[in-house]
Length: 100
Image (cartoon, rainbow, N blue to C red; front, side, top):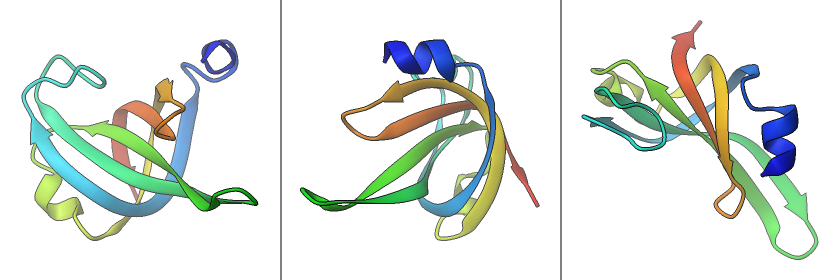
């Protein structure tokens, strides 16, 4: 986590992938104190000898009202990296927006 904080926290990203899940929230400890949409997007698949294929997901915070339209779609988004959960292979992206 220290390496993430030193090298990647606060960086802007633009990634694409399939939406695995999306839900509305009033408050999310990882993303925002105010209402929004939490979407999980698979942004990478990594091959390794021990575990086979491993996915890396971005958990993104979007404005409220987006959950239904995102489910089961591929999206491209941009936002700011805020934290990592290395055990779950999740990268958290705040202030995200869907781009074309």
